[in-house]
Amino acid sequence: MSNKQIDWSNLGFGYIQTDKRYVSNYKDGAWDEGGLTEDANIVLNECAGVLQYAQTIFEGLKAYRTEDGHIVTFRPDLNAQRMVDSAKRLQMPPFPVERFVEAVEQVVAANADFVPPYGSGATMYLRPYMFGSNPVIGVKPASEYQFRIFATPVGPYFKGGAKPITIRVCDYDRAAPHGTGHIKAGLNYAMSLYAIVDAHEQGYDENMYLDSATRTKVEETGGANFIFITKDGKLVTPKSDTILPSITRRSLCHVAKEYLGMEVEEREVYLSELGDFAECGLCGTAAVISPVGKVVDHGKEICFPSGMDEMGPITKKLYDTLTGIQMGRIEAPEGWIHVIK
Image (cartoon, rainbow, N blue to C red; front, side, top):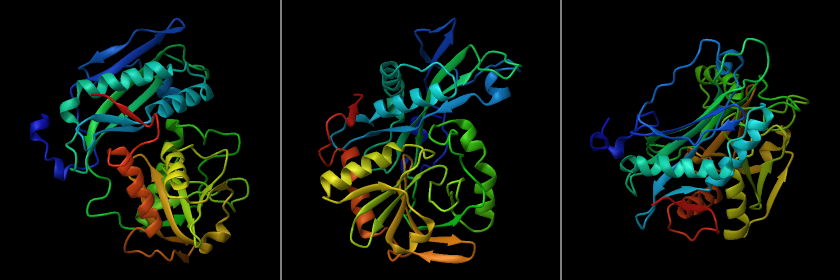
């Protein structure tokens, strides 16, 4: 699809093939020099490690046009480092942080015409990923890998405004202690598909996963971290070794403390205390913050005072401040905004 055919104001959150993507291959103990290609297809042996034992990891970040016309990305070095951590956990060769950022630059620059205009609400979504590519029949790590990044323009996550969602306490476990919940592995998301489809069929927007050891503490949704606002205006985020360390959450915590003067606390959050919070939200790359109006715990409704009509006032300030930083309307902390062109 040509960028000239795209109706930016009505763009959905889906895949549109763009002109170029980045590919680098790992073989004989080293990554090759890599580069851009127009070929969007991948050819693999039927016994490839990724197909047999799900040895694959990924990242997600965005590029967008700022108010002054630049094309930028937001903290790509943190995505790069998180991918290094993910690779190490699955016995994959880390793709160097510097090369990751350079590859992002190349993909964005090569597809600059697909970066939506400022003010459209749309952005360019970038998906770096890596997988075992050589035949592996015994249960062991692959010896060859492919690292790729593709780009696709996406519309705003919320059309018509961010309306609070309803989530349920899930009976399924997302991650076990000492497992892979803290990395961005494809296998973590595969196991969540049954639970999210079931939640949607039951009329809920998302799942709230609890810790698998005691099932008393709030973890995450599987695709986003939780943030809570106390009735006295404190930001609280769950602390757990099985939660993915969200870059958006870390950024929101900094914004809350340094820009809004809020007290920030990362601690264990118990299901039994949800009714004590004034606001709740899910945070991640796609939506920044998705407001939560209600949590349903096996028929028991836990309603937040912020209500089901609009984002809570403090959550809204957090959202407006972080998106203002990303779009160039508010001065960013050093190193947060990476200018492509």
